[in-house]
Amino acid sequence: MTQPLNTSNPAAAQANSIEDFEHNLASIKARIEAAARKAGRDPATIRLLPVSKTVPEARLRMAIAAGMDFLGENKVQEVARKAEMLSDVPGLKFSVIGSLQTNKAKFVAKFADEFQALDNLRQAEALQRRLEAEDRQLDVFVQVNTSDEESKSGLAPDEVQEFVDQLPQYDRLQVKGLMTLALFSEDKEAVRACFVRLRELRDALRESAPAGMKIEELSMGMSGDFELAIEEGATVVRVGQGIFGVRALPVSH
Ligand SMILES: *Cc1c(COP(=O)(O)O)cnc(C)c1O
Image 1: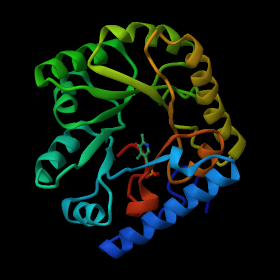
Image 2: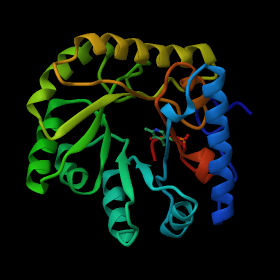
Image 3: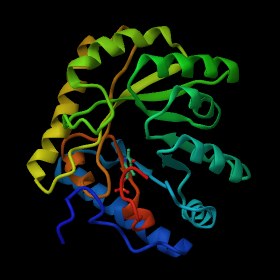
Image 4: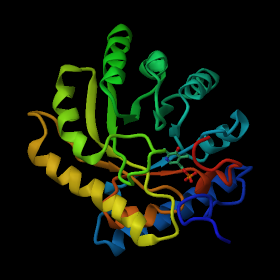
């Protein structure tokens, strides 16, 4: 196995029954709890966001029956489609964790409860306008590129302060925290460095964010690296393959 630590390596076998989902969910929760205790943290301060991208309706319904009610998706149109398909499920919520073109802001405003990939003001502007039209609010995370890879979305760490200083004008957006994707690498310490960088940035912003804005959350860690992320302070971990099973295309699809 030469899979990088934080790509497809620790995927579960494909979950195909409610019992499979219950089992996978319990096992990820137990690992979250163990990682939290090891780091001297209260497990209740860490939210598991199951990432259901590419998973079709029948298996989604099993996941929901197993207790999942807040699902992460990286494609906006997939959220719109699934939200309509599953509109009979009471209380089901979606978090958009992938990049957003401004012309699709209306889908986020209408169907999502959270957007974790905010990284430019045109998005903020488009979301504000659409949220006003829907008369809704949206929780947002600012995405930060902590690995300096050109292929990754997100603001450079040194751009974040100036960016969040602009956000109070968009009063439909509730800024909750920061989100990152770590380096895809087998080098654990290089992965850890990304998480440390996000935490240090959050700590600095606690002091310097605009009045009334509480930047507390750290969304970091996926199936392959969530335990490391918890050691470094993650408050939201986004786990797809560890719950749903292996995907053909691990990260961006
Ligand atoms: C797909 C994805 C995840 C989950 O990845 P897994 O390897 O399936 O756990 C987390 N975050 C983002 C932004 C993703 O696109």
